[in-house]
Image (cartoon, rainbow, N blue to C red; front, side, top):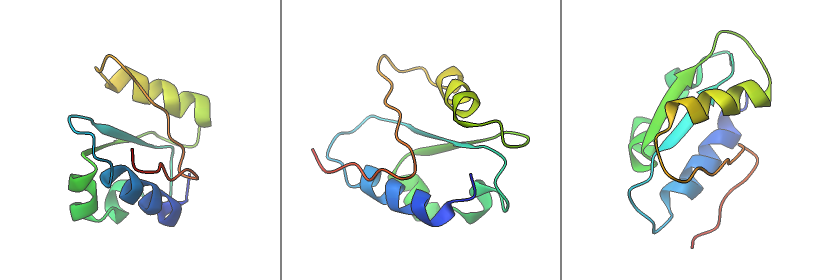
Length: 88
């Protein structure tokens, strides 16, 4: 929520992974400005980002539940914007 710079750092780390075939679901929990408007399109493409926007801040549980509902993978990993995953 309202941490666009941190999110960009996390997405750069995700994009640098050697794994393939993953999708990154970013749930914007009512940020201002909206995350989708501030994402670098090249970074979003590199991290295979799908951005969901909720109407107002509902907290981490609601955001995670929305992300799970939008996903379809066999495995799901939650990565908050204060985490930069290291390369595998």
